[in-house]
Each structure stands twice: as structure tokens, then as C-alpha cells.
Length: 223
Image (cartoon, rainbow, N blue to C red):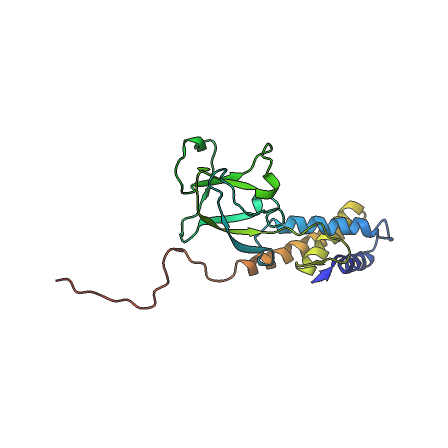
């Protein structure tokens, strides 16, 4: 991992090798904003393991929210990956408002979930609620946590090259004096992201998450 300050320096070094750039004195604040932007974009592309985890949260049984303060855990609704009922392989699905009237749902088992709306006073601390709101028990939730906006000495736990190439491309695109270099760095950035996404998706994927994998089989004779 590199700090924002170190990435800033490396982007400036890349830019200094490009002939024809209109500004040879690179503003650190401007480059830092471009690095931050690239991180924000790639953060949303996947649930990267360095930012994701599982937690078990209890439902309050009244408002349909969890009893845990999520302020520093889940910054936005889209940072929730999947929700399972504890001790079950059944996931809680997102509410589809155009086909489901949530006020018609009843019982103590969670069925759907949705993000809290603009009038919810606990939107920041609870982020989402389940339906029916009377549901009880625990939820197993997989989610990602967004880092705060980076300051110069913060380490950024993401691929250095992706951030450097992306920020260099942004700078060159704004500069507009070297289209060939701009396209070059766009291609390098896209190639690096493709590598990272391929690596992320590599590995066996189970098509059936319900049962264990059986290595041997037994037969019982019918009588």
C-alpha cells in the first residue's frame, strides 16, 4: 500500500515524462482529487475483500432496523452485498415497490429489505430496514466499508498502478494537449482494471450453496 502523498508524487512523475502537457507544475491538490475520484469509482465496481466483511446484527422487532449503530460500518445502502437470516441459506431479498406492498407483509420472519428514506431520522445510523417490521432474530450481513476521504498520509489499500494510471489519464484528458498520451493511459488503466477484475473472479464458484460437497456416495438397498 502507498500513501496518498506517495501516489501523488508518482502521478506527477508520470506526467513529467509526457511531452506537450500544458502545465509542467502539477498541483498536488488537483492530482489528489483525481486519485480520490479514481478510488471512488473502482471501489464501487466490486465488493473487494480488503473492504468487505461479515457481521451478525439483531433486529429490533419494532421498526425493522438492526440494534447496531452502522454509522462507521455501512456508509451507503449500496454497500450492502447480501443479507441472510441467521442459521439459514435463505437470503432476504430487496423490496420491489412496484410489485410488493410491504404493509401487507406480516409475521416475525424477515422477507425483504430496503434503504431508509429521506424522512427517516435514523438513516445514517441504521441505513436499512426489513419488512415486515415486526421481524425478529439475527441477520448475517456481508457489506463493504468505505474509507473516509483520504488525507496525504493515509495509506490507500488498493492497487497502486490502477490509481496512478487512472489519475494520470484524468489529468491528461483535462490538459488536452497530448491526445495520444491520453489514449495510452486510458488503455493502460483499463487493462490494469481488467487484470484486477479477472483476479477477483478467479476461483471455484459453487452453483449450489445449500448442501456440502459430497466426495463419496452410499446406496441403500430397497426391501
